[in-house]
Image (cartoon, rainbow over all chains, first blue to last red; front, top):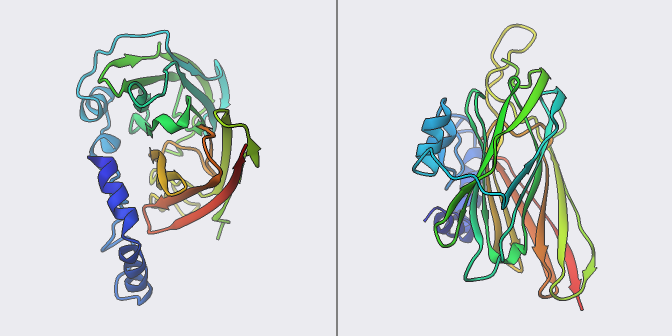
Length: 169
Length: 109
């Protein structure tokens, strides 16, 4: 559903252009009318302040079986919580019949625990992501994946010791 | 004002059919959380990229939703199976109507 919305939105290039034009007239101050959320962005799970609520809103449950197919790499000690490199890899055939469809990345005690959501297609060939995230303090990072068949599987939580927090709070 | 935008993609220009290649990207963006304060003690409003959309030959490949927990100047790497020659396009959108896009060509043999 969400992806459909995003695609429809992308398809209507005119809408984006019109919005930009309206914003450009100065009639609407940025941060007001478009107080910002990008169409299709799932605000509710991203705004939850507790891990359980963020998981329930995004996945629908909080108890997910751990699978060795879901691998999460992160440094065991991060001097700077503002940029902690994480790598996510999930074993999957990644074909039209069986692929990793959605992956969620959580930091248990960040001010908002859901850090990212990735929506893959079979064309990715490999469910793989590398990026850098902020961590407020020493904490667990975890990943949950849902396959196209609806199977849910989680990584083991990965503890990262953070020396300087990275949320600027 | 800090630099913003300037999206970049690094990936092989050519690949064999069926090969899985790695795509690396970078964009300049403050990714402000809305929790930090400036020197005057005033809250810096949240300003961050919320979506990254990746297409190949205009077909959806990867859709990403980000939060304020993604580091400033976001680096992102992912994979793609090379099936046909064409253009990979990435679009980044933030919560203040910022939109940036760039592309890279792939030749498949």
